[in-house]
Length: 594
Image (cartoon, rainbow, N blue to C red; front, side):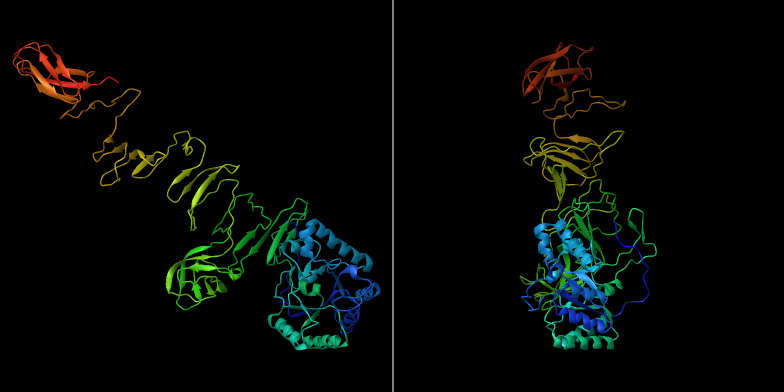
C-alpha cells in the first residue's frame, strides 16, 4: 500500500473552530469578495472552473460576467488559495459514469495543469461541481488532491472525511442563519466552510464583513480550506515510515474509510472502514470483485462478511416503538430498513438507532415478548471464498431462514453435493444421485463413525443395510431389510444369508460352528426304532447333502451301516440301519450345495 505523503508527528493541541472563506465557479464580482477578505487579513480559497476564465457572456444563474485572467492573478498575488472546481464545471460523477476513471483522472490533471501554467499556483485541494460525487469519484480525486469539498449545507464534523467535506452557500441564508452555523462550529470545535458564488453586491459584501467580525469575536481561526484541513488530517505514529519503494508501514490512518485502488490501469479496488457504533472492521468490494485473502486469515474474534439479517433474541413491548437485541449490532445505516416479526406491524422500518443493542421503530409493537425471531431488511450478505484450507478451531454455525447447507463444488462451479442440517445430498455424475467417496488414506488410517447405527438406503429411500454398534435397550424403529449388528450378548448378528467367496476360518482353538436345532432345523438327532426313523423337517431338499453319525449304540453290539433310504423334499427324510434291531440315536446335519 503506497501513500504519497510523509509522516509527521501529531501536535498535542486539539484544533479549534475554523471558518473557511471560499468562492466557487469564476465570476467577476468575486474579485471584490476576495479583495474584502484580503483587507480583513484573511486568505480564502477560490474553487475555480478554469475554463470559465475570460469566457464571453454572462452567467445564466447570477447574471455576472465571468472572471478575467487579470482578476485571478490579483487573487493569487493577494495570497489566496486556488483550487479546482472541474475544468468546465463538469459533474464529476456523471463524467466518471460516461467516460470512466482514466478519463476523469486526466480531466482533473488538465485542470490542475492549466491553473499552474496560467497562474503559477500549485493546487492541493478541490471541490465537486454541484456537490456530485461517489466513492469511486472520491478515490480518483484523491490521487491528485489532498482534500476535497462537497456541497451539503451543513457544518463539518470535527474530523471530516478529507474528500467529502461539507460547505454552506452563503448567498441566500440570512446573516443570523449563518451566525448560527458559526456558533455550531464553535460548539463542536469543527470547520464551517462558507462559500460564495455570484451576485456579490454591496449588501453581500457587508454581510460578509459582519460575519468576519462575528467569527473573530468568538475566537474562530479564519482562512483557507487547505489550512483548516491540514490541522485535522495527518499521520499519527512515531513509527510511521515510508520505505525505499514508497510503501508505508506501521502507520495510523485517521479517516472514516480507506479506498485502495490499482494505479496500473488493470482496474479493481476495495474499501476498508470501521463500523460507526462498534468499531468492527468491514470490507466492501464495491466493484463486484471478491475480497481475497492471499495469506492465512486469523480471526481472533468473530469474522463477519456482510451483516446478519435474522435474529431470535429481540424483545418487544406492547405499544412501544423501542426494541432491543443483544446480537443485532444496530448502526446508523440500519435507519430506513424494514423489520418484521411477531408483534411488529407490517411495513415497519427502523426509524432511529439508539445503540448497538437498541433501535426505534416507525410503528409501535403490538405485543410484549422476549426471544422474538425478527428479520431485518439489510442488504444480502456476500460469501467467504478461501483459496486454501479453512480451519475452524471451535465450530461452524449456519444461520438463515431457509435450508442451511455446506456445499462442495468443482472449480468450474459444478456442485458435487452438500451437507444440509439433516442429510448429505450428492449432485455428482457418478450414477443416479452421484457418488460419495470416503478415503481414509494410507498408513493405518481409519474412519471412525460414532453412533448407535449406520443406515444405508437406496435411492427410493428404502433401508437396505443397517450396521449397528449395539441394540441393548435401543429402539431402531421399523425392521430394516438387512441388519448386521452386535446383539445383547456381544455376538455379531445378521438377519440374512451370510456369503463369503473365501474360506470361513475359526481361528481360535475351542471355537467352532454352532447350528440351532429345533422344528424344521438343519441339525438334530433321532432314535432308530426297529432299525429306522423318519425325520420331519422342511429344510430338506432334493439336493440336500445329509450327514449321519451314531451318537450311542442301542440294540446292537457294534455300529451298523446307516443311510438315507427315502426323502420327501420340504417334508422329511428316512434313516435306515443294516440291523432291524438297531435302536441307536443318530445325529444328522443337512448341508446344501452352493
